[in-house]
Length: 428
Image (cartoon, rainbow, N blue to C red; front, side, top):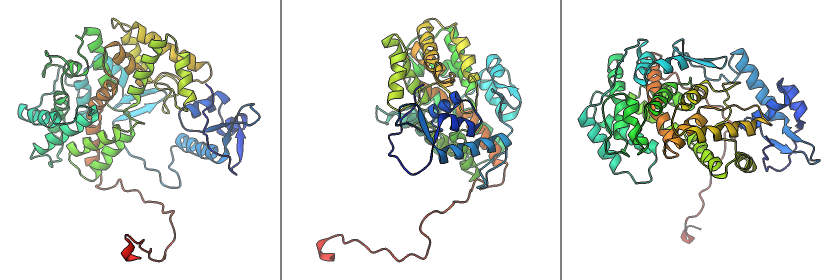
């Protein structure tokens, strides 16, 4: 992978060579370029043209973060650490309540996995339903949104409408929150505009979600991929949206509000939009017949290649690995799978980056005739169950504990009162 140019002017900070940077971080030079690709380091082309240089202060800060992460101790600034029994990520694998998440997703439906996260019990065959009146209220609210509204807009409005229709929303007892969870997840799906006339509001959630994502008829292999993707995406430790949910729950916001907080963060371009970026890149590769010019264009524009690398995994994202295996059985997925492999192979010539779940989701969405926003919809619906699991856990903690102290770096008081600028000629 070529170096990403920052375009920043030269400054007084000391610059390090690639070798010096690798030595300071205790990694191979190839890993330095992986840090650049993930946005954790910035680089500048050396004026001599013989390589890249790196800001010494930025490298030292990354080295401190790496040491802190490996030791498990908080920084001197008191970085927030949250106790949780929900998800563990360790040694390129992840676990839901101690059970391998990929094995759970391979053997159980999304609803069964959600119950496992919420209660620690498996309930084979469980399905979720939402009250018809609440679904109707959510659909009315969604229907008045502008036509260009994105999936997260629709889901957030549906959650707000459901909240307004629930007079018991402020009951934060475990039984009440579980009742809300089992109706809110199917309601979000039912509120999405269908793309097929034969859509359904009963049965497994994946079967209900499919006609909201594409107008094509589903086959069993594709439905299995979608259901497995939902299960794999239920939770992933403290992602940014999950932390927002816990902050809201810490302030004792009700479950609808907590989920709305997660949806608000998910909509950010560095979180929920990643699957859409990978979708569009796959279409470009299919259009051009090769990944090389597409990858080159991404790097030339100073962007990371979508769908590659994950800061929590040294190797391949286990979620991607599980989905790629299932996608082999999907009729018509072969071209998109080949394009995804071409992207990974092309990039791997210069940087040790592996496919992540966004690239696997993109193969599903492209091969199924879905829009580029479909991956965001799948992600949001799936993660709603995980958000509620974290809200449940946070309701059992001390209220308002998510209150870090700010480190003020502004002008020291006392400062003189500011002078008001004149607003019209008569005040001059």
